[in-house]
Image (cartoon, rainbow over all chains, first blue to last red; front, side, top):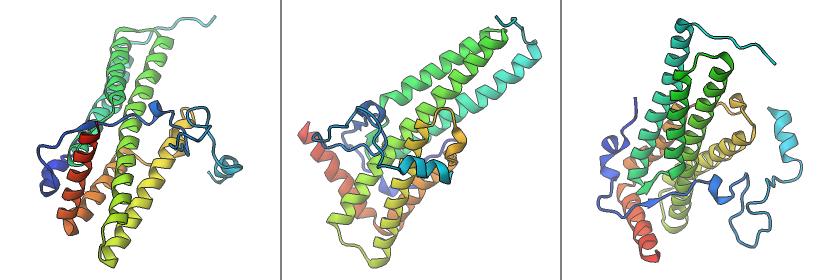
Length: 61
Length: 187
């Protein structure tokens, strides 16, 4: 069953707001640890986890 | 070349029934719940959620029409893959937005010590889950890498709204309104 947050938390709903469509993170060149600053040369090119993070993470899991 | 094998009608029915429930209905429910949450924070889900859901249904239609074993496997994985993408896109986009809202509120407004502690905890929890979701997206086909199901993700959204509903309705509404008006004016 789908949840109806708007009914449950009706007090929080703002009416008549202009809505904006969110962008998919993947379409923004979104990889892990994506830095959205334009000066970052790695944006949208390849994943750039901190050195050793992925190896450490994979070992732990 | 492998030999073609046709599955029986009974086998096909069972497969279709399971896939329909796990791939289509669950994704539909999840996206509807996410839409409901997005309405509260004044956003709309990314288009990719809907295109992936459409593809999910298309592959289910292909699955329904075939009786050949390998083709069934292909379509089965396609349905699962697209449903996973639709759900991940929706939850990651919403979590990113929640992070921004919580971060801005914590910087701009002053809360009681207890509420601030809860909001910081919530912010960190959402940030962690978002990172894990995106990380699990990189591990191809390994859904057990990160074990947080749809209900737990929705629980997280629920928890965030509950905090605001209990203690900071006006602050939340005012902030959402301000953000929306700013983004509307900037566009």
